[in-house]
Image 1 (cartoon, helix red, strand yellow):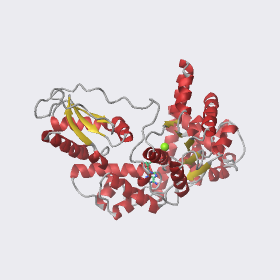
Image 2 (cartoon, helix red, strand yellow):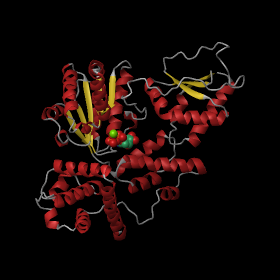
Image 3 (cartoon, protein in one colour):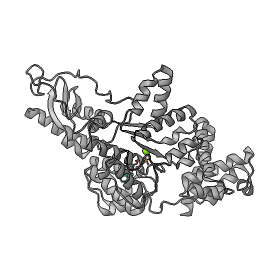
Image 4 (cartoon, rainbow, N blue to C red):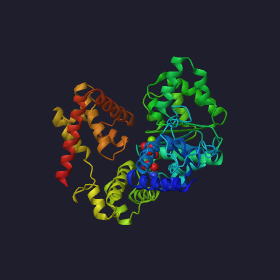
Length: 461
Ligand code: ADP
Ligand code: MG
């Protein structure tokens, strides 16, 4: 690579870091720049996992940064580690200093795998996963599966609320297996990916290609398997996929928002199969674990974060880890713009918190008050057994609000409302969620209830 090209590369890295802070990663430094060829800056990635991730999640940021630093319409191309790169004949090679060219490189948008396959994030390795009391078992089982796929726990079924690290563990397992055996065939899809791939295969009569894709693999990973609920034909197909893989000792890894028994309308034979291996739950992280996760995320982004700042954020945000990440991104942007260190003051300001606004949840009692007021129903009916719609809908709204706004488990919420079981609560939550999507008037009612509960708690604190 010529010196001017090297300069472009260094400028590009600096530009990414300041102007695309949220996309920027420390490991970008390890990309190998091969120079500018035919209107493209060619970069070789460390692995095909990195290449796929760069193509899907980072291309726009790289192109934008490249155009800013060169002032020319160039594009970035990411290559595999095994790719020898463009031939450096005088005709094909053009250093930026010699002969600037317009961009006419092929699009990098196409993905290596099947369109429904998910892309693995190289940051989601075990080395970046903080182990705490909330996830110790799920982590240990994932490591075991990563080391002995098909032989440790099969299937491995990880469940827990949103944003607690299920996808991270699924990807960590995949990364570990790929590291040990780059030729291992891993098919990693969302449940929706499985469903839509199946429906397309049925419609286009391409079932054998579909079956090949899902059954001729060393490991099948399906994220958010709860979306199989109520999908009879897809469940049937998945049942056979499962059996084929299981019988040939191929690994199956699933994530879910609930235990197998709690997935509504899931065939019994699938419920029982999901329980054949190991079913393990991830809980919400405690304060100490949240602090460690923040520090780990900050390290990945090369941000200096003092203990005081990490502790402050961890004490403010106690629900899901994605929100912790959101806070870091916000701080990172501020720091990039203002070039100041992250102080406690800055963190306070960025999180928009007045000092009295501590994380507090409304009580189930407060929720019942607000809902009975709004619907003019009696508390005793709400807590009783009546199933008439005039009662059952407000009851479902209560369960939904309790699930979203408090830390009570499904079981606890069920117990509150006439000793109903957790599946009833889950069903209520789903019903209210989908009704809100379908009916905007209803959605605004629910939103107004949420707001009045929020107000209540601000007044109380
Ligand atoms: P889920 O799939 O359960 O909804 P994700 O795996 O997407 O959750 O996690 C949300 C975010 O939280 C991701 O950025 C993930 O890396 C991070 N995260 C969750 N748990 C941990 C952990 N124990 N250590 C580090 N990061 C974590
Ligand atoms: Mg997930």
